[in-house]
Length: 168
Image 1: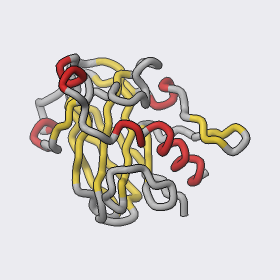
Image 2: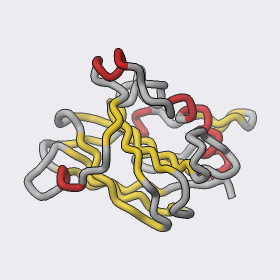
Image 3: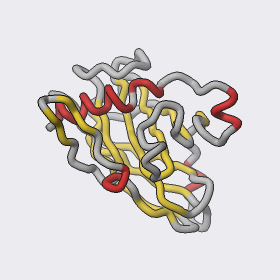
């Protein structure tokens, strides 16, 4: 299961590591933001207070990508709304993911453990909102549908947990 999760991440997340070109950013997609926990303070929002558990180490980079819960956007290169680049903390950490409005979203997290800004199946970890099962066909990872990762954000702050998965 862990190998499948990482294989999926390699297919789905690896291509979207680079900073988006200006045209993508202007269209409302592929914005790189910082982790600003004040956006998840009581009375603020809409946002997602995301607790990420199972981080194997504090090495490398952590990428948190937020998508509209639409089949045409989910896990597609440069079709994420925002990407938070953060320094991981071994064990668990919390980030605040602002969203543009109340609605349905999905989140994918990548722990680039060796810091090379690429998906390395043997070392990097991955997780998705709702912690869906990741299937395979003939040993090839198949991403879960966006419906399995989708969740609703109302006007305030929504709490969510994602468990990281690693190959070993």
